[in-house]
Amino acid sequence: MRTVPDALVVRNLQKRYGSVRALHGVDLTVAEGELVGLLGPNGAGKSTLVKIAAGLVRATSGDARVAGARAGSRDARASLGYLAELFRFPGWYTADELLELHQRLAGSTGGAAERARLLDLVALSEARTRRVDAMSKGMAQRLGIAQALVGEPRLLLLDEPTSALDPVGRRTVRLLLEELRGRGVSVLLNSHLLSEIELVCDRVTILLGGEVVATGSPQELARPRGVELETDAGVQTIPGATREDAPRLVAGAVAAGRRVYGVRVLTSTLEEVYLEAVGGETD
Amino acid sequence: MIAGYGFREAVRRKMFAVVLVLTVVFLVLFWLVNHFVFGQLSTITPPADANVDTRTFAGAFLTGLAMFSTLFLGVVLAVFLTLGVVGGDAERGLLQPLVVRPVGRTTLLLARFVGAAAVVVGYVLVVYFTCLAITGLTGHWWPDNVAWPGIEVAGGAVEVVALSLLGSVVLSSTANGIAVFMLFGAGLVAGLLGTIGHALNSHSVKTASTIASYLLPFEGLYQDALRMMTATASGLTGFLLQLGPFGGAYVHGWGIRAWGAGYLVVVLALAALAFNRKSL
Image (cartoon, rainbow over all chains, first blue to last red; front, side):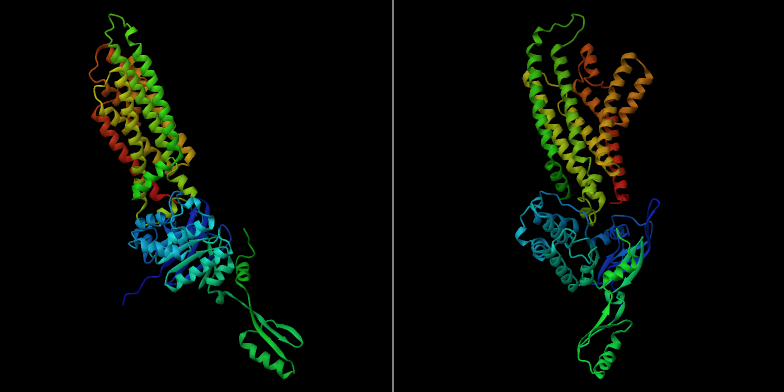
């Protein structure tokens, strides 16, 4: 039986810019339909990793494959959509013309129907004939996501896709990402917004100094921090207790004549996991 | 479609409009010069032993001057249309969304070249033939060869498009603009060097000029265009015309044309090679 290759497989990836080590032995897999978040402080190598996957930068050594094809090859580029952190589109294009240009470049046969669907997906149907230079930053950002989706790519590489968006725009993108996951599109999402990553990503990889320092689902990464019990005597935290201890703790409190109003299993948030992984390092 | 993108990109730049305005100013001034020169032509009496055909000399000199101006304006247009095609566009984030598409970097680069070259060639030919028409209708003088000189000047400008494109891959926009204009200046110096070498009959200076003209073939093509313009002029008239307004016509013939074509291919190949290896 022939197996479908993972959307992105990165093995022992190294990248040096002169004496600067941007990536050092990075391993990463984005499976079919998986949404993986990439976290790390500035200079951790996140954008370099995304750029190598997109074929914009050559790795010094190691292997990066998109849908089974070497990153940067024609087949790899045909399988991905990319939105750069800093991008611009020619101002004189209308939204529809820009998507048409990218359809031609991507070899998409979707035609006007695909363009209309993509503009609808990013809530830009009304701006179909609006020129790019007449769009707000948020609209241009959403148009960028639409162009990345031209040709129904298997892998979507998004580098800070919500950096220019207001809270409503961020929510639109988040819902969009969830919809894409539902359709089986794989996404590698590079973002500084931990809450966003925590909400939508199946797995998270944290980079520091060009190396992977933590990887797993948000649940796997979260560490137990005890159980919080709310009784008529007040709120009591039992450090070291886990989810499995909760029934016993409740039964013990009831047996002791307490009225139990609530019980909550405490785990670390992604922010705490992140800060622990990067050692509190900031930009 | 992709070449169309390059063409649209080229004509949408503000620089194109600026060059168009400057061109109109130049053409008006050129008409005025023609009007006064040919108006007073009958009062010019060359020495009896000089054997100079005054009308041919004036017509060819003015057309040669116009040809140089056309090349200069064409080069300005070529440089400003292409100086930031790779480095500048990558810095602004315009290039990355296009480069990740399966169409490939080489195709994109060639598309930008075709777009810019089409604009520059069209511009040079329009200005060249307008100048010919001004001189022809005002002074009743037409060059021996009407089409070839224009084609060669346009070819020279296309060489600059390719050089500027190559520069845009390896240099920043500003550095590239400076570098290409310096190369253009070096080409002019090579032409003047040839004139000096011939005047002094210095073999080494002539050789240096010829080598420089081949290294920068836009200058060689310009020289050949100058020669083609008055191919049948002889005697002192021919000699004076060969001096040209900015360098003589010493490099000429199919050799420089074939070299120019090969040079173009090599420069574009180098640009594509460098672009394919460039991190964006």
